[in-house]
Image (spheres, rainbow, N blue to C red):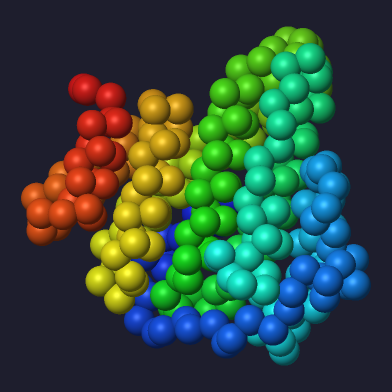
Length: 249
Protein backbone atom coordinates (compact mmCIF):
# COMPACT_ATOMS: atom_id res chain seq x y z
CA UNK A 1 0.00 0.00 0.00
CA UNK A 2 1.26 3.43 -0.91
CA UNK A 3 2.82 5.41 1.90
CA UNK A 4 1.31 8.85 2.33
CA UNK A 5 3.07 12.11 3.05
CA UNK A 6 0.03 13.68 4.70
CA UNK A 7 1.95 14.15 7.95
CA UNK A 8 4.57 16.22 6.14
CA UNK A 9 1.77 18.29 4.63
CA UNK A 10 0.17 18.82 7.99
CA UNK A 11 3.38 19.77 9.75
CA UNK A 12 4.32 22.16 7.00
CA UNK A 13 0.91 23.77 7.09
CA UNK A 14 0.78 24.19 10.82
CA UNK A 15 4.37 25.07 11.62
CA UNK A 16 6.23 26.42 8.61
CA UNK A 17 8.33 29.20 10.08
CA UNK A 18 11.34 29.33 7.78
CA UNK A 19 11.66 30.40 4.18
CA UNK A 20 12.48 27.74 1.62
CA UNK A 21 13.82 29.74 -1.28
CA UNK A 22 15.32 27.43 -3.86
CA UNK A 23 18.61 28.45 -5.49
CA UNK A 24 18.57 29.50 -9.14
CA UNK A 25 17.83 26.53 -11.40
CA UNK A 26 20.98 25.04 -12.87
CA UNK A 27 19.93 22.17 -15.08
CA UNK A 28 18.06 21.93 -18.35
CA UNK A 29 16.41 19.03 -20.14
CA UNK A 30 19.66 17.71 -21.60
CA UNK A 31 21.31 17.66 -18.17
CA UNK A 32 18.54 15.49 -16.74
CA UNK A 33 18.66 13.27 -19.82
CA UNK A 34 22.37 12.75 -19.28
CA UNK A 35 21.60 11.62 -15.74
CA UNK A 36 19.05 9.12 -17.04
CA UNK A 37 15.81 11.09 -16.83
CA UNK A 38 14.30 11.09 -20.32
CA UNK A 39 11.13 13.10 -20.87
CA UNK A 40 10.62 12.59 -24.62
CA UNK A 41 8.57 9.38 -24.30
CA UNK A 42 5.44 8.18 -22.48
CA UNK A 43 6.25 7.10 -18.95
CA UNK A 44 5.31 3.89 -17.18
CA UNK A 45 4.91 3.72 -13.39
CA UNK A 46 8.44 2.35 -13.29
CA UNK A 47 9.71 5.46 -15.09
CA UNK A 48 8.30 7.67 -12.34
CA UNK A 49 9.98 5.49 -9.73
CA UNK A 50 13.26 5.70 -11.65
CA UNK A 51 12.92 9.49 -11.94
CA UNK A 52 12.57 9.74 -8.17
CA UNK A 53 15.78 7.78 -7.74
CA UNK A 54 17.64 9.92 -10.31
CA UNK A 55 16.53 13.17 -8.70
CA UNK A 56 17.40 11.92 -5.23
CA UNK A 57 20.88 11.09 -6.46
CA UNK A 58 21.73 14.18 -8.50
CA UNK A 59 20.34 16.71 -6.01
CA UNK A 60 22.35 15.60 -2.99
CA UNK A 61 24.17 18.80 -2.05
CA UNK A 62 22.82 20.42 -5.23
CA UNK A 63 19.29 21.72 -4.67
CA UNK A 64 19.82 23.98 -7.68
CA UNK A 65 19.25 20.85 -9.78
CA UNK A 66 15.66 20.39 -8.64
CA UNK A 67 13.22 20.92 -11.54
CA UNK A 68 11.18 24.12 -11.26
CA UNK A 69 7.56 24.96 -11.82
CA UNK A 70 7.44 26.71 -15.20
CA UNK A 71 11.22 27.12 -15.04
CA UNK A 72 12.95 28.33 -18.20
CA UNK A 73 15.46 25.49 -18.06
CA UNK A 74 13.74 22.72 -16.15
CA UNK A 75 10.03 23.48 -16.35
CA UNK A 76 9.46 20.73 -18.92
CA UNK A 77 10.95 18.18 -16.54
CA UNK A 78 8.68 19.08 -13.65
CA UNK A 79 5.73 19.16 -16.04
CA UNK A 80 6.58 15.59 -17.04
CA UNK A 81 6.60 14.53 -13.41
CA UNK A 82 3.10 15.97 -13.03
CA UNK A 83 1.61 14.15 -16.03
CA UNK A 84 -0.93 11.62 -14.80
CA UNK A 85 -0.91 8.01 -15.89
CA UNK A 86 -3.43 7.26 -18.66
CA UNK A 87 -6.60 5.53 -17.56
CA UNK A 88 -6.85 2.00 -18.89
CA UNK A 89 -10.20 0.46 -17.95
CA UNK A 90 -9.23 -2.76 -19.73
CA UNK A 91 -6.31 -3.30 -17.37
CA UNK A 92 -7.05 -5.65 -14.45
CA UNK A 93 -7.88 -3.62 -11.36
CA UNK A 94 -5.01 -5.08 -9.32
CA UNK A 95 -2.47 -4.05 -11.96
CA UNK A 96 -4.06 -0.61 -12.26
CA UNK A 97 -4.06 -0.15 -8.49
CA UNK A 98 -0.40 -1.12 -8.19
CA UNK A 99 0.53 1.18 -11.09
CA UNK A 100 -1.02 4.22 -9.45
CA UNK A 101 0.35 3.30 -6.03
CA UNK A 102 3.83 3.07 -7.56
CA UNK A 103 3.53 6.54 -9.05
CA UNK A 104 2.19 7.85 -5.76
CA UNK A 105 5.26 6.54 -3.98
CA UNK A 106 7.46 8.29 -6.52
CA UNK A 107 5.62 11.59 -6.06
CA UNK A 108 6.07 11.24 -2.32
CA UNK A 109 9.83 10.73 -2.67
CA UNK A 110 10.23 13.63 -5.09
CA UNK A 111 8.16 16.02 -2.98
CA UNK A 112 10.36 15.40 0.04
CA UNK A 113 13.37 16.65 -1.94
CA UNK A 114 11.78 20.10 -2.08
CA UNK A 115 11.11 20.30 1.65
CA UNK A 116 14.00 18.62 3.48
CA UNK A 117 13.06 20.41 6.69
CA UNK A 118 9.43 20.02 7.78
CA UNK A 119 9.45 23.52 9.25
CA UNK A 120 10.24 25.10 5.88
CA UNK A 121 7.52 26.78 3.87
CA UNK A 122 6.62 24.61 0.86
CA UNK A 123 7.57 25.97 -2.58
CA UNK A 124 5.17 25.90 -5.53
CA UNK A 125 6.79 22.72 -6.85
CA UNK A 126 5.79 20.90 -3.67
CA UNK A 127 2.24 22.20 -3.98
CA UNK A 128 1.96 20.92 -7.56
CA UNK A 129 3.37 17.54 -6.54
CA UNK A 130 0.81 17.37 -3.75
CA UNK A 131 -1.87 18.13 -6.31
CA UNK A 132 -0.65 15.19 -8.41
CA UNK A 133 -0.62 13.02 -5.29
CA UNK A 134 -4.22 13.97 -4.56
CA UNK A 135 -5.18 12.97 -8.09
CA UNK A 136 -3.54 9.60 -7.55
CA UNK A 137 -5.42 9.26 -4.29
CA UNK A 138 -8.68 9.86 -6.16
CA UNK A 139 -7.86 7.10 -8.65
CA UNK A 140 -6.89 4.67 -5.89
CA UNK A 141 -9.99 5.46 -3.87
CA UNK A 142 -12.19 5.05 -6.93
CA UNK A 143 -10.70 1.61 -7.59
CA UNK A 144 -10.58 0.54 -3.94
CA UNK A 145 -13.83 -1.44 -3.81
CA UNK A 146 -13.08 -3.32 -7.02
CA UNK A 147 -9.55 -3.97 -5.79
CA UNK A 148 -10.84 -5.55 -2.58
CA UNK A 149 -13.44 -7.52 -4.53
CA UNK A 150 -10.65 -9.01 -6.66
CA UNK A 151 -9.59 -10.92 -3.53
CA UNK A 152 -12.00 -13.69 -2.62
CA UNK A 153 -13.50 -13.85 0.90
CA UNK A 154 -11.14 -16.69 1.79
CA UNK A 155 -8.02 -15.03 0.40
CA UNK A 156 -5.41 -14.85 3.21
CA UNK A 157 -4.42 -11.34 2.05
CA UNK A 158 -7.93 -9.94 2.25
CA UNK A 159 -7.80 -8.82 5.90
CA UNK A 160 -4.49 -7.04 5.39
CA UNK A 161 -5.79 -5.35 2.26
CA UNK A 162 -8.86 -4.10 4.08
CA UNK A 163 -6.72 -2.77 6.91
CA UNK A 164 -4.47 -1.05 4.41
CA UNK A 165 -7.39 0.58 2.67
CA UNK A 166 -8.70 1.96 5.96
CA UNK A 167 -5.29 3.49 6.61
CA UNK A 168 -5.35 4.92 3.09
CA UNK A 169 -8.69 6.61 3.77
CA UNK A 170 -7.35 8.16 6.97
CA UNK A 171 -4.20 9.28 5.17
CA UNK A 172 -6.20 10.84 2.36
CA UNK A 173 -8.26 12.78 4.87
CA UNK A 174 -5.16 14.11 6.55
CA UNK A 175 -3.73 15.05 3.15
CA UNK A 176 -6.86 17.07 2.39
CA UNK A 177 -6.65 18.78 5.77
CA UNK A 178 -2.95 19.44 5.36
CA UNK A 179 -3.53 21.03 1.96
CA UNK A 180 -6.19 23.32 3.39
CA UNK A 181 -3.86 24.40 6.18
CA UNK A 182 -1.12 25.18 3.66
CA UNK A 183 -3.55 27.65 2.11
CA UNK A 184 -3.66 29.46 5.47
CA UNK A 185 0.03 30.35 5.32
CA UNK A 186 0.42 34.10 4.77
CA UNK A 187 4.14 33.58 4.07
CA UNK A 188 3.25 31.92 0.76
CA UNK A 189 2.38 33.83 -2.42
CA UNK A 190 -1.37 34.09 -2.87
CA UNK A 191 -1.20 32.26 -6.20
CA UNK A 192 0.35 29.27 -4.43
CA UNK A 193 -2.33 29.29 -1.74
CA UNK A 194 -5.05 29.44 -4.38
CA UNK A 195 -3.44 26.58 -6.30
CA UNK A 196 -3.36 24.46 -3.16
CA UNK A 197 -7.04 25.10 -2.49
CA UNK A 198 -7.90 24.20 -6.07
CA UNK A 199 -6.05 20.89 -5.83
CA UNK A 200 -7.89 20.04 -2.62
CA UNK A 201 -11.25 21.11 -4.05
CA UNK A 202 -10.83 18.84 -7.08
CA UNK A 203 -10.24 15.85 -4.80
CA UNK A 204 -12.94 16.55 -2.21
CA UNK A 205 -15.93 14.89 -3.96
CA UNK A 206 -14.22 11.48 -3.98
CA UNK A 207 -11.96 11.58 -0.94
CA UNK A 208 -14.04 13.48 1.61
CA UNK A 209 -16.94 11.02 1.93
CA UNK A 210 -14.47 8.21 2.67
CA UNK A 211 -12.57 10.21 5.28
CA UNK A 212 -13.01 9.43 9.01
CA UNK A 213 -15.77 11.47 10.62
CA UNK A 214 -13.48 13.44 12.94
CA UNK A 215 -11.29 14.51 10.03
CA UNK A 216 -14.38 15.45 8.02
CA UNK A 217 -15.41 17.83 10.78
CA UNK A 218 -11.91 19.34 10.96
CA UNK A 219 -12.00 19.93 7.21
CA UNK A 220 -15.41 21.61 7.45
CA UNK A 221 -14.20 23.81 10.30
CA UNK A 222 -11.06 24.92 8.48
CA UNK A 223 -12.91 25.74 5.27
CA UNK A 224 -15.61 27.66 7.15
CA UNK A 225 -12.92 29.67 8.94
CA UNK A 226 -11.21 30.46 5.64
CA UNK A 227 -14.43 31.58 3.99
CA UNK A 228 -15.15 33.84 6.95
CA UNK A 229 -11.61 35.12 7.37
CA UNK A 230 -10.11 35.55 3.91
CA UNK A 231 -10.64 39.01 2.41
CA UNK A 232 -12.70 39.30 -0.75
CA UNK A 233 -10.71 38.20 -3.77
CA UNK A 234 -9.30 35.18 -5.54
CA UNK A 235 -8.20 33.39 -2.38
CA UNK A 236 -11.60 33.69 -0.69
CA UNK A 237 -13.27 32.62 -3.94
CA UNK A 238 -11.15 29.46 -3.89
CA UNK A 239 -12.18 28.78 -0.28
CA UNK A 240 -15.84 29.26 -1.19
CA UNK A 241 -15.43 26.79 -4.05
CA UNK A 242 -13.95 24.29 -1.60
CA UNK A 243 -16.86 24.76 0.77
CA UNK A 244 -19.35 24.21 -2.06
CA UNK A 245 -17.54 20.99 -2.99
CA UNK A 246 -18.19 19.54 0.47
CA UNK A 247 -21.21 17.24 0.65
CA UNK A 248 -24.14 18.60 2.62
CA UNK A 249 -24.69 16.96 5.97
